Amino acid sequence: MKILVTGGIGYIGSHTVVELMNLGHIPIIIDNLVNSDIEVLDRIEKITGKRPIFEKVEMCNFDEMHRLFEKYPDIDAVIHFAALLLVEESVEEPLIYYYNNLTSTINLLQCMAEFNINKIVFSSSCTVYGEPDNLPVDEFAPIKPAMSPYGNTKKICEDILTDTVKATDIRCIMLRYFNPIGAHETALIGEFQDGPPHHLIPYITETAFGKREKLRIFGNDYNTPDGTCLRDYIHVVDIAIAHIAAIERMMKNTDKNIEVFNLGTGIGYSVLDMVNAFETATGIKINYEIVPRRAGDVEAVYADTHRANTELNWKAERTLEEMMRSAWKWEKALAGEK
Ligand code: UFG
Image (cartoon, rainbow, N blue to C red; front, side, top):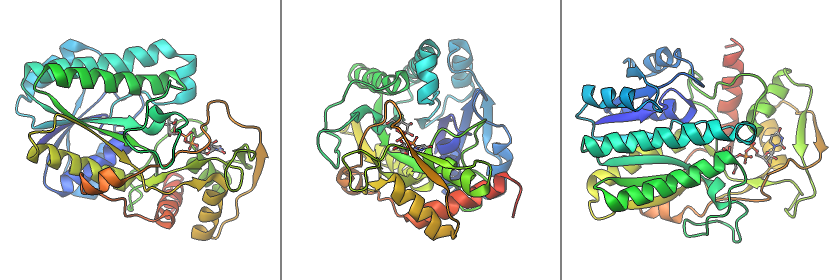
């Protein structure tokens, strides 16, 4: 199949492209290179032995998108990753986030409708559940007011997709990611970032590497077993594989127009659990201190994965130890070590 992958050289996108290529599919990657590195194409080629098709496209520019669809009118399905995704930045620059994440999605859907391309897998996030009333959280849980403009763009894109599916032939699977971590086993692809990390695991690995003096743990007075927040951390390769399952499901099922699946392991680990898991997996001690809570953090969120396991026929398989080992290998690879 020919699959258009927006944001296909980003963190989750690049891992998904590798899995698609391993199965013989043909990804057509588009990316505006704002938050990504063109060198990832070389790395994908090293892993798969083939260079994926790449087009530099600004999705917010309708004409550029239209020209892309004219060039590739025989796309079978779309996986839509491309988005700005930093929570704090979105609070500072809400208009940039709303403009980018919504306009790109609208332009994509308009082109899909015009060119009769009717299958899309959308990258959503557990952020739409906010602080859930019940845990584990399933797909029927109420959508809560977003904690950030970034989170709101995910919610609004879900609404845009839901309404578009009702009004057109387009069908959609929305995948709500919990906390993707880790990297490809080759350590050729992983999460690239400029400046200080935004998420827990790169903070842990940079501290272990000596780039940072200590990890700051945001609060130990939450109502959780050890007082630190609970999250559902999942290996990025497991997330990537779920996209293939979603595409395959859409190819087979013609009666379901829109579906939503949680992508997690179903286990909630605390921040201290993660520090311990890293220490056990690598033998390296992490220097940390407890600091006040971070604004906007939810106390606990982890997935009910029943629906993804049974309907999507997908299950996260990689262990926490594998997640930590791959994250550590990636950190060392970034620094040019073997
Ligand atoms: N944490 C620390 N110290 C750090 C970084 C994180 O203690 O230096 C803690 C956070 O307080 C939180 C946990 O580690 O309890 C995980 O934090 P991350 O920043 O790694 O991940 P989040 O759960 O905050 O972020 C995820 C997704 C976002 C999404 C957000 C909101 O990565 O894309 O959930 O639901 F927007």
